[in-house]
Image 1: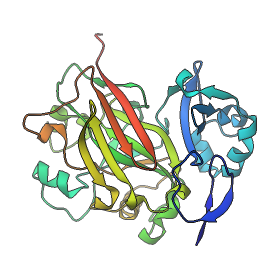
Image 2: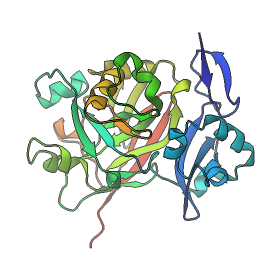
Image 3: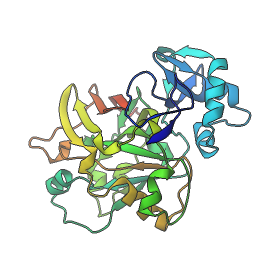
Amino acid sequence: MTVVRLSAHIGYNLVNNEPSWGESTLRLASVVIAGRPTWGVVDGADFLDVGEVLRASLPTLRTAIAAAAWPDIAAARSQAPRTPLAALQFLPVIPDPDKILCVGLNYETHRRETGRAEVGHPTIFLRLNGSQLGHGGDIIRPHVSDTLDYEGELAVVIGKGGRYIAEADAMAHVAGYACYNDGTVREWQHHTHQFTPGKNFPATGAFGPWMVTADEIPNVEALKLTTRLDGVVVQEAGLDQLIFSIPRIIAYCSAFTPLQPGDVIATGTPGGVGFKREPKLLMRPGSTVEVEISGIGTLINGIADEAAS
């Protein structure tokens, strides 16, 4: 079996369907360089500003995904200005998605630790764009709460939109994968049975550092998710432990809303969240939280208190 790979070093070629997690993996990111938002390819310790080359036709990563502009990206690499990663600011991988769909209670370990009943359909809630931040930024604990919790997750970025997508066809609609920290303000999540308030405080949903294209990951269920708080492992699970699989989630969500290129689906967090531990283990100012997914990368964020207004 062969697949089309869009890898950063070998271009747009046919190769054996085997995983490759090295420097050849195509990693796409949205960033700010000298105050200017752009997008491009992470190449080792550098960033190739493909967005600068293609900005007349493809001003954002979302527009590039919608256009399936993989050959354009490959062609623009040689012309793209190169910037050290240390000199830029990461944005959320997709800063401007049409929607961010989140799946709750999608690992049995997390369902059991919350005491929730089994359900026959995915538990879906929404995040707003303004609640997101990128790799390296500080997740902000709002002054109205001291129960800011971590939730390491796999994010799926939609490449091809559609409505009523069949499970059998769903993976063909995936552009790539990234790390997500669905940071939660627990009191506000628990005010009612609706999750929305606790999931939408500004700068609580970390997304990044980059997206690895789906062709680079032939079997997403073989990946492992690990969350660390101040260097200590607090969550660890295989992606094969999802209660509702990625195809099932895509099929379900596309039934009630048309999916658009660049839409983001956060697929749920495993057991080990801080609010359900005794004693509770919550994100505090000065802490560092990492969400690592094998074959994709590591999303790292600090924690800070909300500035006084």
